[in-house]
Image 1 (cartoon, rainbow, N blue to C red):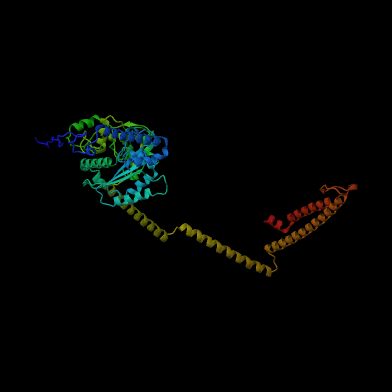
Image 2: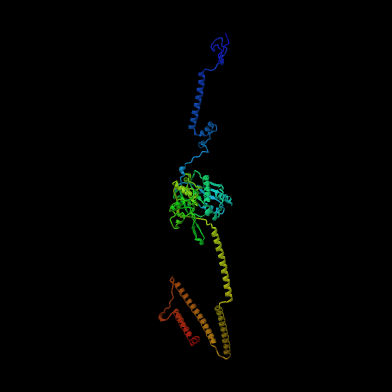
Length: 557
């Protein structure tokens, strides 16, 4: 019999515990019973619950401890600010708040202003002058530029102008976000007027321009934008309030009328943008006859569409708020709600209903039931760019002007030579006649002097000598009259002084006026006698004049 038999679990076959004599396992090495472990686990759970309750009570009762308790318990997983509990990389936008309304500037609706640029260095100063003058709040406008296929310094000048604009000391001048994108599309058509507006280049050029617009829009449109405004850089004149004016109509897509100034010899002005029009049955019939990839363009004899153009309906004195529903739109100035582009409308870079770019954009917007209107009497002015024919004609006009000026100068010199050679005889005759008369007068005067000298030698007094003696007598008489008059005035003033002294002695303040009057007994006073003598002397003088030798001489003559 095996005395050391053991069970498979390793324990001895002998009974464990108790007081048996065969137990070789001490009591201290035996495992604890299950009730003891359960009691210990329950104690730990109770302590944990009490701690959590205490922390929660402190968190609610003492708010000032919250900034310290949260980092301590979370071991730095959370910050002390409740707002920072959300992830910074997650942003939420409610697009129902960016639908675009007619009073966008009051609701602080953001506008994305998009401008494609290609070899536009010469136009940027004018364009930025327009940006500075816009009345829509600048901080609500984000600028987006696409510089493509440029051979000049468009990008460098653009960066310089943007720096000046954003660093302006006027706090209302800087704009919001500004994006400058550089992307070439392999545009091979030159930027001169003949190349850009030539019929052969229109289809390919329009498709590349559509790609450029779509690239620019997709890269810069934000969920915060309510409006998108497309503006060409070569607009010469436009109202400063154009954004508010167009926005006030509350249309999905809206464009103004676009004209351009011309020299006087070309008529002064002309419609420019013919891409804003209403559809016509003739154009629809024409589209059915064209290939699938064909693109209809307006203003060319190759495609006679007979469409009503917005440009030709302009009235300079018409209501600027008059609206006209259109199907195609021009790209010089377009204001559209951002929801139009978010809905999928874009600038087709392919033939969409036989149209591309902005005209295809208008067609697509109408297809998706968006409102597309134009303002026939609200006009902006595009920069005049002379064509090759215009330049040739201007050169011919300048040459004709120089020839005409040269001919006028030669004619003036010829007339001056004739005038110098053959002077006016009337003028010379007048001078000669005056000289002859002057000489005759001198001769007569000499003869008279000689005759008077002979008469004096012979004792014959000449009439002129008598007249001189009479004149001397008159001078003496006038001098005597003046002396006598002064003496009388002096005598009268002395008499008046005596009278004034007498009135002062009597103590009266009245002013006495001395008039000629009779004394007692019918005798005349001194003043009356003086007046009478003056009248008498005046009569004597008149009599002397009438009987003087000079008067007799005049009567004899």
